Structures are given as C-alpha cells and as structure tokens.
Image (tube, rainbow over all chains, first blue to last red; front, side):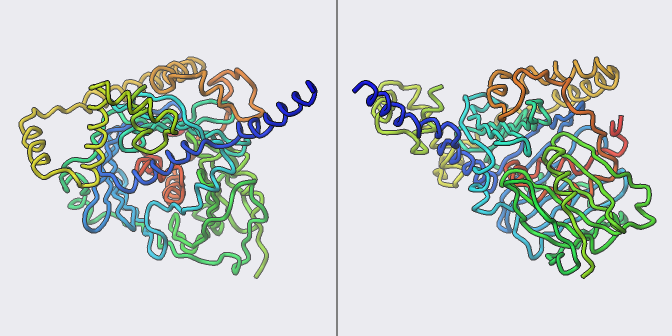
Length: 323
Length: 175
C-alpha cells in the first residue's frame, strides 16, 4: 500500500516538474500588454542607453495624431542626432555628416512589425516568468524575465509600468549572465498634453542641401537570384526577404530571421572597389553581434541582437547557386 | 507590494481564492482604494475616457505648476561616466563597468544568476568573462538601421533602440 501511495505521489508530481520549464501565462499576458502599450500610448521622457563602456542619454517623445503615431528620438550626448519615425518611415538627421537617411516601409507591415504568432514562437525559445515589482523613474513596475532555453539567444529582463504596461527598463544579458546593454528611463510622463512641435525635426530648414540616402526597400524573392540560407539555428524562422539600397549599392539582398524576440538580418552585397577594404570576422556592440564573410564575389554581413554563435551559424549557411 | 495585487486584480489575473481576500483588503484599506481609483483614472485618461471637467481641472493645475527641467541633471552624469571610462582603460575599466553596472541598473545579481540558461557555469565572474570581440566598425549603422524595424524585442521599446543606428562618428567608437 505504502509503495503504491508513493508511486501515486511520484506520478502526481511529474506534470508539476515539467511545468517548471513552462512560461507563466500571466507573464505572457504582460508581454502582450507591453506590446499594446507600445502601440497605444503617448509619452515623453529621457532614457539612458548603457552598453560596453558607453553611456548615452536621449530624449524620446511619442504622440498619436490623426494620421497615426509619430515618434522622435533625440540624442543628447555628443553630436546632436535625431530620428523621426512615423507610421511607414524612419528618417535620421545626421548634422555631423550632413546626411538624411530614410527607410520607408512601403508595401510592408506598418511599425512595429509584430506578427500575432510571434509571441507563440517566443514561448518555444524562452521561459517567460514574472519577477518582483521594482521602481523605475518614479513608476512601480513589474519585472518580466525572458530566460533563453539554449545558448543561441540572449535573455532579457524587462520592467513595465503596473498601471499602463509601458516598458521602463530593458536589460539584455548574455549566456554567462553578463549585462550586455540596458535601456532605462530616468524621467517619463505618460499621456497628457504633448505639443506637436515636440515630434517635429529641428534640422528641416538647414537640411535642405544635405545628402539624402533612401533605402528603396522592396520585397523580393532572393531564391530567384540563387540565394538561399541552408539552415537556421533552432527556433529561428524566416520573417521576410527584400532588396534595398545600402552603402550606395542598389539591389542588396536582405533576409530576416526571428525567434519571436530576437531578429537576425542577412545582407548580401556584391564585392566592389568601394568595399574592398572590408574585413571579414566577428564584432560586437552591446547586444548586437556582426559577422562578415566573403562568399565568391559577394560580402555576406549578418547583424542581430543574438550571440556570436547564432550570427555565425546563419552566415555560414548562406549559399549561392547560379540561377 | 499591494500595488502589484491591484494591477493583477484589474487585469483579471487573480484566482478566486485570492479574490475575496483582495476585495476585503480594498474594503478595509482607504489607501488601497485610492490606488485602485488612480490606476483606473490613468487607464481611463489614456483611453480618452476621462470626464472633460476633470481634464480641464488637471490642465489648469498643470499650467499653474512651475516648469522643472529635470533631465538637465542627468546629462552631465552621462558625460562624467564617459570621461571616467576613457581615463581608466584596461583592467581598471573592466572594474568600473562592474561597479557602474551594479547599483540601480543591475540591482539584483542573485535573481539574474537564478535565471541562468541551462549549461551556464554558476557564479561566473561578471565582466572578466566578456569575450574579447572587436567593437563594430564605423559604417555598421546602415545595416543596423535596415535591421532595427524587424526586431520584436526592439518593437517593445518604440523608437528607443534606433539610438544604436546613429553612432556619433566623432565619439568613442573603436577605442
């Protein structure tokens, strides 16, 4: 009898131990709440971006107007730089090199590019759980931790405002638990009246003679040009592929993979005199890994907020067959 | 801690056994009821449901408040940190990173340690184990700009992660 009872207890514990590796449904709902807050809220505030040995302060304002949301990012340290994002384009004003960079989203999804099933994908590669309640920029916020299930992706610790779901802090940590980068609001006002002037670029008048770099991004089937990525790290799926103008060259191939949280981009551009000095190999900034590889008469550049191993795996799986 | 309970209550995340306790708490504690009211008020105003008379009253009060330029105090701190980093290169720099990363930004190392992915060595030293990888070259911004809009992680943060795509050409890159 005792043995039977023990067996029954052991059996009843089995599903419980499996459940430890499962994401907490309440934590998943918090992620949804954060995404919907991102698309809904108007706010203005100051945040600090901390990576490697650098700390940079920026002002951010988001305002929802009749034509859709408009966001402005101003970097407050060093050279003044501004980014304005509207429903279908991102415009960067760079006074130090007198350049305007434009990335249009025509024919693609409006910002942010989140698909409904991405959260489902995410749960396959990360364990999502709720943590403590902390305080950031004067707001009580709920900690949500995304722990990677393997070493092919980074973990994230988020903290979102209890009342609105607005993300106040996002920390990316490596497979060895080192902090790679942190975005933290130091001051923030959510909602309320925001002057339209606060989301307008201040360089428009002087930018009339600046150089304009337009990405000309357009969806494309790169397999027709002979380009394929043989395999991806587990959990990563192809999201989209396109051609764009990059570094002055048109028709550069761009393929995007994502595991529902991290994204990795593959760029394929012809080797030319302009990029002859390029060095192959691995580099890193904060949570971003970059791997450059020469493939026949092309440069393959893989960029993503993922560990070196993941970007290398994807870069080395790129193949070219003459169509 | 109770604020979290209220948030959970508003989101319908409380199970039945806790519900009675939480509702009793609300009934007996005036402070909790005020928090409950404030959270609903925030939600209503964000959805544009606040009463016009209330909005007008708040606008009047705000107009009467003196303007406080709080961010001013923060900017020099960032500059100081950069200066400090440039001065203390090498091992001292690594120590500084750990020191700077700990207060505030990384306030609970135990919790992060508990969230180690399977296979990570327990108690791994912090900054010393950062792999020595070349910092990204100037010019990578164009790739980052093209990449950024596809990142689901970045989408949670609005336009903030675009800060990566506009590195200061004259700044501390490649030190």
